[in-house]
Length: 421
Image (tube, rainbow, N blue to C red; front, side, top):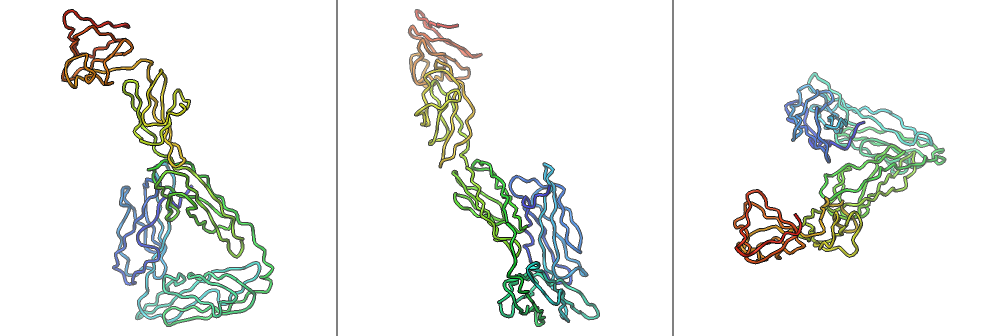
């Protein structure tokens, strides 16, 4: 499979012109889209050669146009292989402007006939240039080379900048082709049976777009039309932008993309196709201290216990009243995040000694929970603190754990009543 949207040639710009005669420096480069990681990349320049590209950015190579190279339109192809094995490709072209004197223009076909079966046709224009004893032939079909196409009356056919003629109505007219001070006239006839032309059904096959998380890389949009013509994408609603078929989202919420195809002389305009998806907020990170859970996201939280939504638990802080496995999800602009990593909380609060204020066990400011442990509290005395606890009264706790290197000083006449070993 070849993905023609995962890399894009960004230099030279499509249709850039260079003077014939050699010596011009051309930077060939492409830009990967989304998460594509190109390897084994190369550029092929028609009539000039092929050039390998480094496997790390910037994906570029410098070339010098040869003295006796091609003139006119010169096609460029970029090829690569993604690290996943997907083949990547893009095409472009440059124009080599001939030097010397334009002796003549030649067009094919020289007489254009359209009807209900043949409703459009391309033409091809070559220019013959002489420079001393040397004559060169240049492909001048593309409008970017300087060729101009005009219907004489604009009544029975249209022509685009690249010489593709489309029938509009029955009759006769003339196509005028101009390059510099040279011009050609080509007769165009549209048969009366053109009015009986029927159009094929044009359907758009637009892939479903899965939900995204805010901050993900831009990604390519993929759709094909029965006509074979390009599908045009636009943002119908939501916060997103599209450039060259690459979609970038910049806020949470639902995004709807419209795919359109206007048809051609053989296919009717297609019915627009819409695809909607959610841009979800990043999943929250939750933490536990004593019997209190907190989310790193200020708004839009919903807490869950054992996978079941806790009614009304929508604040950033949640006070645990019983044991279980707790998670949180965040909703922003109607789109909900993935679930946080779970935290298991026991039925009894855990108090860790900090010794922030003094050595006194009885001082609430020395405990992580901000309260003195009681018979329902599991106590942990961590090592490496500035001060270790001293017990100056009879105290109780549910359980007591001393980390290696930690100490407790129980003053004479007092005890710690540990209810559970």
